[in-house]
Image 1 (cartoon, protein in one colour):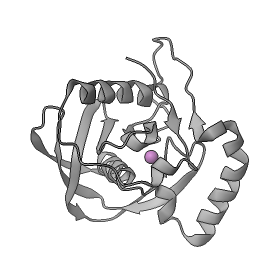
Image 2: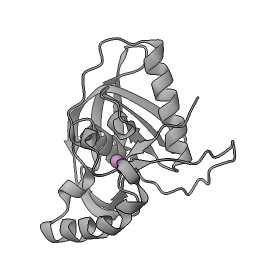
Image 3: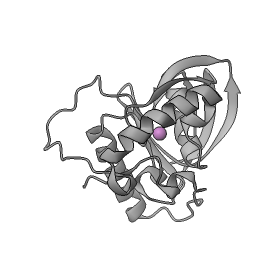
Image 4: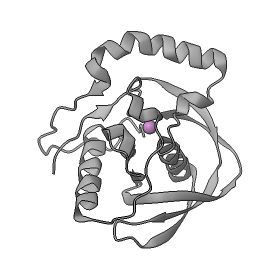
Amino acid sequence: MSLLDIHVLGSPILRMETRIVTDFTSELKDLAENMFETMRAAEGIGLAAPQVGREERLAVIEVDREKYVIVNPEVIVEEGEDRQEEGCLSIPDIHGEIDRARRVVVDAFDLDGVQRRIEAEGLLARCLLHEIDHLHGKLFIDYLSLLKRRAALGTWETLKAKYPGSIRHLASVGGSQVSPSGSGDM
Ligand code: NI
């Protein structure tokens, strides 16, 4: 396994549409494993392929110690409303309160090419919607009001200097335990 570099706001791939996965290869499993490792090293709870510079329609999630790999996901049902603070591993240190559905039903393939249905509420529902947005070039800041988006982008102007080439290079955690509190970014 290896840590992958995370693309941050400004990298064009974050705005691109992903490609539907048709071949469920061992390379795809390796990618998912490396994405889990990268997500944990960054103390996140979700990570989508474009965030590591890949075009596959695939994301990984770990919420409440449950791991999910979603390939070619589709939102079948969205119900209710929930407003919570949200952040993204590709826009470090920027957060915003975002309205999302409270409950979702998502159909997605697993790494063996088997279609599965995920019924989720609360944080898992939010994370699923956030990652599926990533797979279609959408970021959480897109939902902010014009004023709040301007403020966030203004802050980002000063933060982005930390990420030359729009790349966030993670230091190896060396097998140490990541704190369960984490950043909660996705
Ligand atoms: Ni994100």
